[in-house]
Image (cartoon, rainbow, N blue to C red):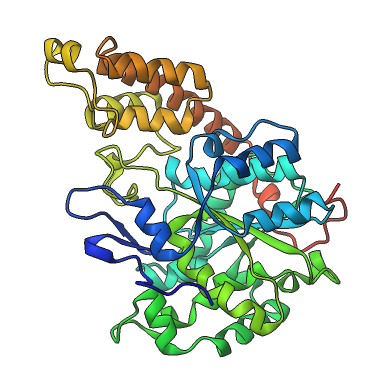
Length: 400
């Protein structure tokens, strides 16, 4: 059975679940404690080296720098792959806002790398139903937002011959629904309260939702893609706040004759103001959005990005920056491709030879480039392309 200890990760004021992420009073998320509580494994260098060897391409920057830092059974996926057994990828998004911020793009950027490196198919779930139940949004508005978000996802460059995107409101039924019922029968009310922290005030829609996010982990939920491939393993790249869903899924899987999905999990992309949780779509100044102009990005980084530099140039030259809390350095850790340049910046800035303004300047360049590239790619995504990615169709070359 999957580890249940302190299921919601709520030890000593730290809360991590699919709907809330917050650190202890003014502190930051303790990821070691989270690994312990959730019962997953740390992603170590030997696994990263193995990915490098098996794919013959350099590991993604998110792997090299520990952005994706935890896993469940990823080594088993690699064991199978080494023997010539393929797998498929599953990730998703809850469409609750029109604009995505950079934190939302991280799982998709990494999933695209996995798809390209391992040459495997991918299913992307848009949980428009979940957002309708959790947010004060109508069914129609959630459906509209799902299509808008699909454009941002497609703009990340996924291969249409290997990718199926679906909205729950449109796709749930048939085999998918049969699997949902099988999962639901295996999870007691007490268990779901233990995992997700539901209370008597929550409507039954919330309590009944977890199977919807669970069953894309099973190939039989997609007969148009994986008919006769019930043994295909599934790998889920996601942020670690989604772990509770898949602890539940992994617990149930053997009882309904399915493989447990494997997971590869990321840390949170910190807010500009500092590392006490993840960025919030409700506070526009806490995040860099893919719709921000170059001017917005410059303004946000200069005004809001929390600096670990000293409060005067003299002091800074003497003591250097505190890289542990410096947000510009943390953002560069995510998005500056060049390892040598990043090390140089850390060394110079940490020693006080480089000033906060210079580091922020470099970050503004890096972010502006990423957002501009994304904006152009998204502008090229048409409604017809969204329809094509969402069409229920076989993908004959998905393993080529």
